[in-house]
Amino acid sequence: MPFSWRDLTMHGALSVTAMGTLLLAAPALAQVIAPIERNLPPVISGQGRLMIGPQDLSGSPDDTTLGVQLSGLALIGAKEAVVGHGGRGIRIGAIGDISRPALEQALSPFIGRPLSRKLISDIQAAIAKVYREAGYPFVSVTLPPQEVTSGVLTLRVVEFRTGAVKVSGAEAGTDADLAGRVRAAPGQRISADALDEDLAWLNRYPYRSVNGVFAPGDDLGLSTLTLEVTPQKPWQAFAGWSNTGTHSTGFDRYFAGFGAALVGMPQSFLSYQVTGSPNFWSNPGSVGTGPEQPSYYSQAGRLVIATGTRQSVEIAPNYVATRQTGALSDFTYDNTTLEIPIYYRIAISNLLPNLYAGDLLLGVTGKTVSRTSYFGASDIGGAQADLFELVAGWSVSRADPYGTTSLELKLVGNPGGVIGGNDGAQWNTYSGGRVTDITYGYGAADLTRVTRLPGSFNWVSQFTGLAAGQPLPDTEQLSLGGFYATRAYTLDDGTGDTGLVWRNELRTPTFALLPALGVGGMSDQVSPYAFLDVGWGRAYGYQGLLGPVESQDYSLAGLGAGFDYTLGRNFTVSLVAGIALTDAVYTRTGDANVQARVYVSY
Image (tube, rainbow, N blue to C red):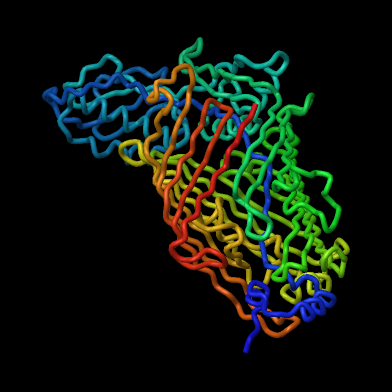
């Protein structure tokens, strides 16, 4: 009958003597399996954007007919004169570089209809929509003086171009750098896609917000772009608590950290966070002491260095150390994980002009894992292994009339070798036979969709997927449960070599709580929601040291409610309560799970 080491370790089926013998042979086997718990510094960014208001076309709702049917439409440019009697159909003059077929398709349905002031307004709106959908929303569509008794309507179409670029509110000496990071040369067409991308990159810097605002320029057809900058102090300190840990290391997590701008390096910054279980904070000197190691301890950082316009190098080192008790309490295990990913991110439009298709990501990651086993206070053996991975990715975010969509795709491959412990033999020992082939490849995807619904409701849908064809190292597996995955479950309720998590939230309209309680002078916001999450994963079978281990599938589903509460810019509480709808490793059907996170910053 196939042997499941997971069942054995969780239910304590071996004697102390047998367990000790196995530990000497393969210390990786004797612990309850738990995923890598990462606690990275929060990603903070500015909130600026390109401000594009609705087109003011001075339209009229009056649908009283003017006594003629529309037989022809003439679109003229800024310097063209109105023709007294134009021909039938649609004539497009010198209005600039816009798709003629798109205009004709949008305007053809108006031909033959009774002419009215409302119809003229609808035609103006249709023209503006064509420009907006082409990525050039700054256009004037006006009705010049004319005689329309012939049934031919003439409209003047002027696409605005960049006049000047100004900067307002920025720190002294930074105006030229900011203006140079947007594609808005005088006399050029105003590409909303280009400016959206430029402002998105500018607002990845967390210590200011930059809005792009257009206003009429000094000359006809020109518009002045002003970058309105709202600076903030160039550093931040933060701390908080959550109960998002695991059964084997405890659930309480306390964290603290900071972020700061890099002086003299525009668009560059760093952040750091230390996270620990209560016994780390009560005795931080116990780190690295072996048998007295804290249950959980991590250090993580993020360094972003701008290497040019719309490009950067990103380094995010992460160190995690845990101490876990095995199925038999005399046995304990110290685990450490060190990850150092280095990525180069660049806008695709830097490589392929006029293609605003998000960012390209290229990088390498080095990882090392180790485990030491103890019987009482005695070190009885350990194992260590390394990873070296190549990463290629693509990320993009798009807004539409109904909401926003964000997508990130990654391909990860391990060629084997390069660093010392990145080989099958090391991983065979470390994983107890679960991982023997280290030349793997897998794909990962993160998709988020926010859809606006009637009544100020929102539907937020998040999909995370991992696809691999073989057992993956612990660091690469997908965690199916927890605060950031399938809610109503814990982080260690299941991991997979391949799998998915689909989270869904129905967000109600936000509201201010303090004014309703009679408290003034403070700004707060409550965002309640209901959720339904599902997760599925498969841990592939393998030939273990004690016999074959079958593949195991996990199916998770959680239903519940939660809220996010913010007070000013410095205090956030997130709380979620859910009911499990299926069995998992620890959680059973019908179990309730409440998780929360408190974050304070200055």
